[in-house]
Image (tube, rainbow, N blue to C red; front, side):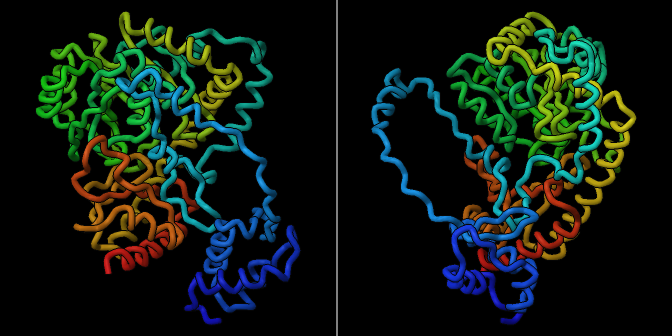
Length: 476
């Protein structure tokens, strides 16, 4: 077999040879398969990934590939059809089901051999693993580390988040929450009753749309351009809907990467104040600014004396998906409502996790990690941008962000987004389709490509080469 032989041909050959091996028996090593069939390691990896997806092979990192054991017949299942009546008997005026497809697109781990351009978190090589491990060990030895924490969170951690917001925000106006998603859920439940409209940026983060819909809210889109949300359209949306909540990401917006322009910041707050509405500020990637970002604008909450802004900040994106520590900041009576809903939902964030977060951000390793991360993210962004422009000039990059972990790409005119996503996966690249980022009809086909969830620039280059093949397949 020559190098140019397809992954499919190799997968078929290996499938035909599986009967030579007993269930659970190890297959030849990848190196042996490379030598035997004269193909590249990438071809072998992708062929084994296909067999694993078919349930014929089990791959174990560091151990190799093994023939899968036969699946045991499933036990006879009961009759759950009664649930259809029970789940819908209260009527459909306010739907209670949740569509998590837009969220799972970036949470699900791709099959072995598939490059993860759909990821929403840092690759382990970018995470401060040693610093987090040391912080957790120190936290576990703190006196009282395993006792119940204050319901609002550790005072020192609340103060740290308040300093990060700036302005006149104090630790007394901060609640510690279990990650940004939980904080957004609390905020929307506190601010809008089921059935109410909520204004959202368009496009926007699918997880927030899922939270809103699962709470029975009606997301209403307000278009975003490279300078953030468009104030005139925001004012129109408030008047047309009577909404009392607007959710936005003013810094490195997901997915566009836009930063709300200085002249729009005050205007957005004034528009919301005139409408008697809250602004939920999701400040999720402030600590993922790139090396060339320059001075960052302050959070909207820092310039809000009237309690218009409910601020959400998080440590998760800059550390690990498992360090789910975030903060809700608000002024006025709404703070008590936020506190009550959070206590009912989750009681409190585990104290050892809060103590570990405090140890981490107070250590000398923390600023070093942020500097390293800023340089690495800039380098990866530039590598992906250059590779896309060289290999896929038909794709459009409307905005190159100076923060965050992904690029927002517009597909060629007439491209079928679903076909593109499927072709990319067949080529060995997992991408995030653009449709879930829109609460209404999208203006064009898009995809979001992450450069932070992969091992490095070499994997970025290989992933873009594979996307070139997928693009040829879809657009030919």
